[in-house]
Image (spheres, rainbow, N blue to C red):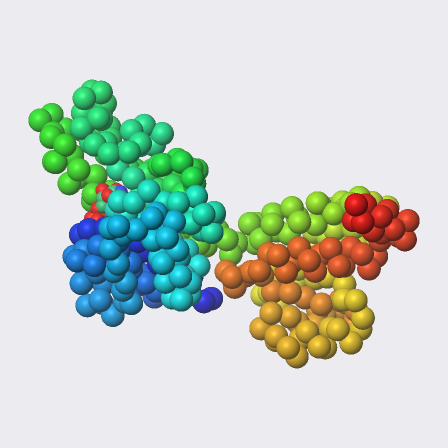
Length: 316
Ligand code: GRF
């Protein structure tokens, strides 16, 4: 399996970045770090990353508009081929456009048990509140600060006599453990058959009069009381492939697609020439393409009265 490509954004010492980077050295780690970028060219974490042979990028945000600076970072992330972004002590509020670009692709680590204590001074806030435990959380980044679905948390007991500094130092140990494991689970989740089926299902069932059944042991999607237009194939006949199988628009299309991109398309066994398999488990699935192929496949089998209704609606 190809490793997921992760870029890490930092502002300072970058100890969480280092934890992600060292974890990524394990052969079975499902992600690799392709870039470490900082909004301060002097961030010590950049030196560490460079010494480890990772591409780095440092650029000061001072005097720049937020969206303008974020566009520079976004361009670097894309140049590096990043599929995911891990914020690790990145002390910048992000522009909505940047967050939208990385929707569901960007994680953050925060030193509190969210939803408690968003923002700064989290350790002191936990001490002031008399909490028995503080801790850290990894969450998906959404437009609101330190918000977004929590993917993992580690509670850390508060000791008598703890100060914000002693507590922060202990939580940092927990952060280093939590971030890598949660990131690994996150990138794996998107390659799991369950997650991939859920995506295919959502796209397929969004088509008019679509329903789901099981056929030949595969979840499949068809027009209610009509023909099937898509199959979800997971290790069918032990082929080890996770794919969606859709109708082509013409028998020649199958051969053409396979010739053009043999890593993506394949000839599904027992389906004949007018279906094509599209592999899904590479971690870089183009879901717009899948949605388009499903819609096309649906159109191939839909009765005329249904397609003409849709065509008429499309004209408005
Ligand atoms: C960590 O405590 C992290 O939770 C917070 O900022 C700090 C960054 O530390 N978001 P480091 O740069 O990773 O050492």
